[in-house]
Amino acid sequence: MTNPGPARAHEILLVEDNPDDVDLTVETFGEVGMASTLRVVPDGVEAMAFLRRQGRYAGAACPDLILLDLNLPRKDGQEVLQEIKGDPDLRSIPVIVLSISRAREDVERAYDLHANCYITKPVDLDEFTEAVRGIERFWLRLARLPR
Image 1 (cartoon, rainbow, N blue to C red):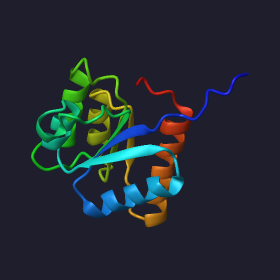
Image 2 (image 1 turned 30 degrees about the vertical axis):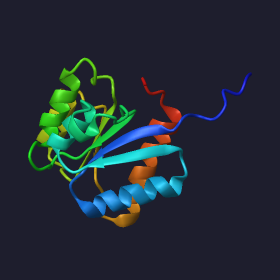
Image 3 (image 1 turned 60 degrees about the vertical axis):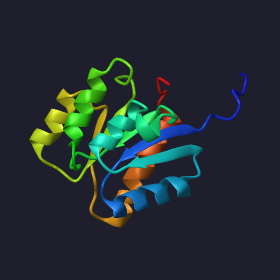
């Protein structure tokens, strides 16, 4: 069996307005040591501009994976998810909803809009770190991504 060589760095888009969650996610991905670039946007409008490479995001790389909070300013996560999955150029990008909401209707709505995964953000710091590590292990090491 031939060794395919080192994996290319993954591009990850984190759509999150909570600075503490952003810092913790960035730190956790950094600790894991996986080759990845984590880009962060604070709201749904910025997320869609990034994904469509508009304005200041004209040179942005298309992400391999999107981590999406639902409770966002300007355009909520469900609207963003609906736009992503309705766009033929974006729909194949896996979207992981990472939200504080445990509401059944939020979970069902996310899957109705074709989220690839729904994770409720743990409140406990260690559990949150483990959830981010689980995302990294499954989505960036085990799963084959389309891009």
